[in-house]
Image 1 (tube, rainbow, N blue to C red):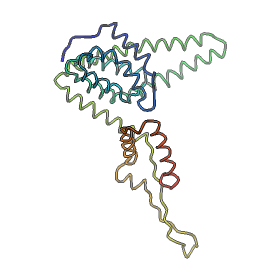
Image 2 (cartoon, rainbow, N blue to C red):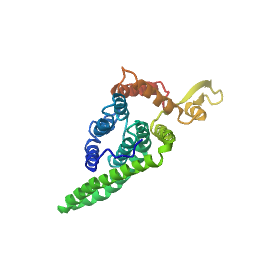
Image 3 (cartoon, rainbow, N blue to C red):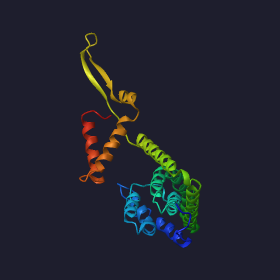
Image 4 (cartoon, helix red, strand yellow):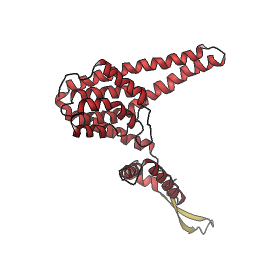
Length: 279
């Protein structure tokens, strides 16, 4: 590990602008912002691992995995990871830490960023700008443009803050990098597990078995078997977890891609619903 800085302020600002420009470029349903993140980190990879093919290959794989967060909040993560890899460039150990930090922070930061930049600020400044524009006041357009410029300036500060915190993280915890990697990995897996439990829906239906005709009322009697209740008694969100694991396994096969998987999930859901397995 080394504490020498390999990136100048000009290079860091260029990397910050690369993320601002590339964060949404190449967005897709399989890895979302993964391609944009990789494109941002290419100069970092070339400079830190360019003369070491094995580490460079590992870095390319590490930075091309799934990533998705609110773009403005992503500046902090990019800054932190650049600092971590810069300080651990000799051994390449920072790649695992960077990957774990990406996974751990992208979910929480997405929630914070969407709330601040998408909902609150968008609703406030957008409504003011729209109202003034409808009244014929050209200042309405200016207010929204000023807000967008302010966000860009703020993003550079967040990148700097992430870079500074990343340096402190590595230098102050240089003796506990393995523990840090494991802790970040556990946090990342916890976040992903929570997202699966909340967002993946697999509602099982209640099966009815006919018991015949009631001799007193003449109505057909049924015995209900609540599949969802019994599944939750084994483990809450059991089937969403199993289904997510199945999709993840299928994506690892050469014959499967994201488009085919989406189509397969739609067909699978229709078939199960047709046979009364899904509610």
